[in-house]
Image (cartoon, rainbow, N blue to C red; front, side, top):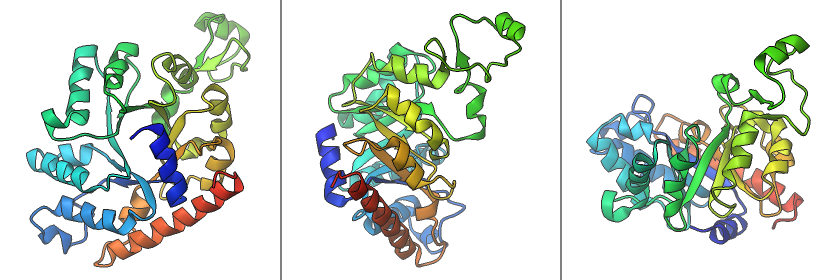
Length: 299
């Protein structure tokens, strides 16, 4: 799916909802566990329940890999069942030297090779350009780079200050910790450098960034660096991120957002009514999103 098609779907459905398909066997409703392929059956019913309100689906690959061959089979069946008008994200967080990344790209993008053809894949950028560009060699496929995540350990590296004029000893001399250096034109956080430098590898038609919803206060700064790119925003819902704050600081003229919700939708109930409750939560989020799209005059 290309950028124009994605924007058209957002306007048509009046939504920028991405549903995370993260099926944990320990949390699935008991009646679903009786099915021959419980993972696929769970996903199938969730897709049926939410497709009217979602523009994207994001299977987290770990939940399938952990089950070995049967997990991969469930993943392939799930991808095949997702409606063709929905954007698909392989949340795999891959990234390795060039020839290895080429094979990762083949695994998730080349249906003739692996049986799967996702629209996009999440990629860890730590190894730099040659670990990312192999994914961009596939036409109309997207790379979604990890930029500023919302997990507790994100501050270990992502918000380290990159200052070419101050060495570590200089910091000590000035009495400043790495996180206390005042931003100016010479300073940037590591996540900002990732966003800025990676734009040399691909444009806003092929490259997105992951920014956690609990980091919404940083979105205005990110938009100064990447005004046109789509941002994948996890953390709204069960993690407590604010949709209103995300839109206030992160929405652009094309919307430019895919807001992911996983647990709050797929585990809205653990009973036989889980699909119905998923529909209700997806509809609630879509209605909030429609209000935001109207307030920004996107629809």
